[in-house]
Image (cartoon, rainbow, N blue to C red; front, top):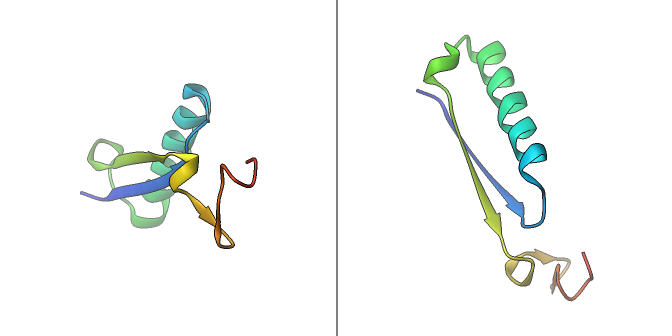
Length: 63
């Protein structure tokens, strides 16, 4: 059973996350030949204050 774990910065709406889940699932099925029922996708949303970019938090950078 393939499991994709994706870490993203908080702030995206449910529609975008649903599309991400769909596309990642499709890519796994296509590349590995896994049945769709066996694929799991986990999205972890990281607070902007805990997401670092070039030595600063995303919150500090106004992202």
